[in-house]
Length: 140
Image 1 (cartoon, rainbow, N blue to C red):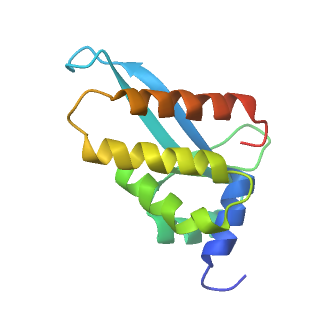
Image 2: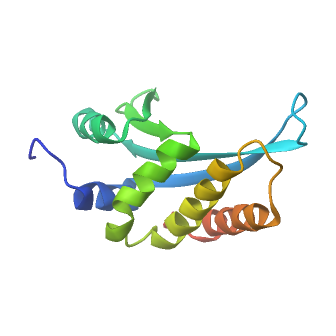
C-alpha cells in the first residue's frame, strides 16, 4: 500500500467499511427536549490502514474485541465540523453512500450555522431522511 492514501481510496473504503449513524438523545439540562447526535464511523481489522486514514481525517479510534476474533478498529467522527470536512472531501468519489452523505452534509451545514438554536423544520426533515436511509438500505 502506498504511503499516501488518495481521497478516491478513502471514499471507496468508506463506501464498503463505513457508516453514518444518527439518533436522538433526551436532554434534561438543555433548553431543547432532545439533541440529535451524528457520527461517521469506519471499521476494519487492519490497524495500519485505519491509522493511515485517521491521520488524514482526525477522528478518534476505538478498539472493539471479542473472544476468538481479531480486534476491530473503529474511527469515529462525532462533531459536525469534522463530519462535514470529511464528507465534503470524499463526496465526489462516493458511490454507495453518496445520497446519505449529501443529506448529512446538508444537515451539518445547517447545524453549524444554527448551533445554539432549536432544530429547524428543515433539520428535522433531514434527520428523518438520514434515519430512514440508514434503516432501509442494507448497504449502509
